[in-house]
Image (cartoon, rainbow, N blue to C red; front, side, top):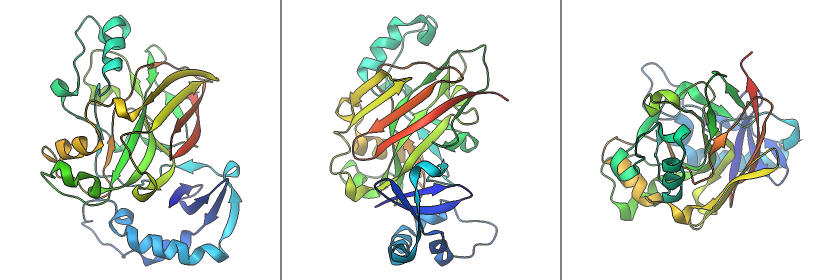
Length: 286
């Protein structure tokens, strides 16, 4: 199943180039009171939501995907977890580029562990990325993003895939500098998910997906998740040894080689096999 969040927090089933407005399905979600439970309430009741969306589908209003503004399909993740330098060829390019390494040796996820991105950085494909500091280099980083569907702590690697609800395309945007990653990667609009959510049953092998990013029609990043240092199951298990994973948490799996700068007016086209393609515009700070 593919579904999206669009326009003014509408919920849509995605089929081909069309979206079916099934927002009424959210009426089955519990009426929560403060203090709210941890996790994203939508993904905590995902099976119920899937059933209700399918029930409403035959009579739902239909729109063209090109006519809607796509928001992040995950509205309220408790955590956005990043995996730094999780492709060896990205490490190689970073060690060769002084604007990436600032004179310091670039290590991999084995040494660096994980980092967190602010929830306020979260946007969708239709909202785009804002260049907040025009005096700093801002880079694109395409990544496979996974959404936790079953929480837990100290999850065995053999069971890790069962804890994934599904996948999105992720953009882990960053400004280059010597500050901690969690600062440089947490600016508003620097955590972009889209174009929609794809349930895990539609992705046969998340460790073997082609991904590509183009800037103004020029290919910048092109790789496959089979080149990950920490594969999908290992990454979930590793994260759960340090954080309790909650339903709706997002894990960005790391970016391959080819990262590069963007500027206002650039048009990014991001694609991951089995998920789809999204267009993202880069804007200047208004």
